[in-house]
Image 1: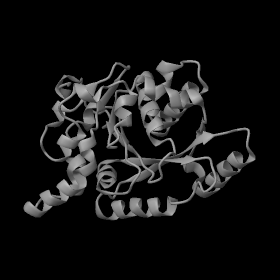
Image 2: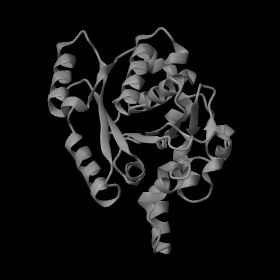
Image 3: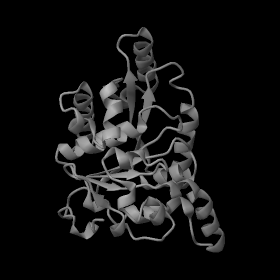
Image 4: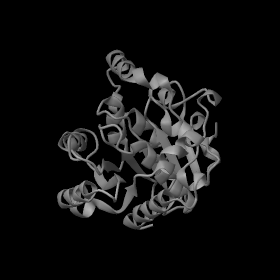
Length: 276
């Protein structure tokens, strides 16, 4: 594990790192793939980036080549106050990319956090992640959080800790299904936990240009979210689905892939929108 104190701090006057959560309670929308590849692409473009795996399946962890057996502490130990953040941040082998890994223990963390709140009246389970990220936010340009496909306590922690959210939306039938529930959860988080939380953008994923349906969904999403929709659209590609099984972001697995181009372009859009 990497002691975060060895990461060079930002100079006085520089912006605090931007914390962005990838959120959608629907599974299979490209959330983890996009979390990995946006974080890696930001790193490739010179931005010091931390990827946080908040999904008990740990796919972002293995997707950047980190073996779950190689570390003692994970995001789980952090959330239940059994580790300090300097003991859970690890450097990946990719440029400017750091990781807080996940483990299967995270699957039961909701109940543990609720129990901790019962025994400690001052304990707020929804603010655990924010408590720790506030200690290292100035060490990174971007912090990307891969949330689980649910709107439970883990995702609520991400919403409370983040500056903004990216909503990945699959370019298929029923693309908007569940979006209103997600937006409602974001509004509740804004009202009760994080007044400054904003929608960073809406990312269209898994587009098959050969079908009229995919193009119709693109127009539908753009008419609904307007300027929040990124210009970059992630195509449906076999190479993108293969890369995580090799423990590599797409730019390392297939540098000439259309997927590599798409995520580099997305990273450029994110940087441009944030004025840095």
